Amino acid sequence: MILLLLGIVLPMKALMALSPPETLQATPQQRDDYDWMARHAEVLALHQQVPPEIVFIGDSITHHWGGVPIGKRRVAPEVWDELFAGVTVSNLGFGFDYADNAYWRILNGELDGIAPRQIFINIGTNNLGYRGDSPQQCAAHIIALVRLIQRRQPQAEIIVLGIYPRREAHLVEPIRQTNLLVQQGVRADGVRFVDVGRCLAGEDGRALPHYFRDVVHPNRAGYARLAVAMRPLIVDGKDE
Image (tube, rainbow, N blue to C red):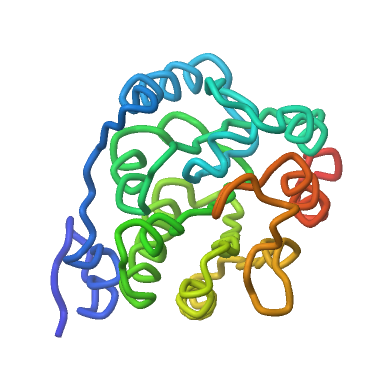
């Protein structure tokens, strides 16, 4: 079946790929821990002043690492600064975010007016651990986010970082399944998937406690280990 969309003839399969799953709730949110909408406004203002070369989209794990906009809780800003030395980077990590909330943020301008060469995505742990989404639903939401970002930033290399391990034993398998589904789903779109978080897990797939300050958030040692795994992925533009 062929449908007409904005003057372009698209097969039904392609049209469906442009639409998020019905379960995705593209909404803003607000939590007591910080002002979510104020951070969103900070991102929009920052990008008008300092267009980033790299964007890192995520939840509290990214939010609390370092970089700008500056959050009130910064666990390892010096690790962030060393990893991205010489590169202009925006931290689009928002504490408590689901993939759904990140989808809303992209729809509402966080990637508008900029042209980064790389976009990193690490999100989904709250979909599984807090909301209790199934691996299939969580993966579908992440893949929808990736495809939205592709449409907004076709020039960028998009790198999806697998959901990092957590301390809860019952989430080991959902994380593994979600990561596998996302890897398979984004491969068809030419997007890289890298499971850097495995460097934080033991043989049983659970987060190693000496790299975490709670069940899900890395401590300074955890961020330092992630930085080592991520460093080969960073493009600084010098070789272009």
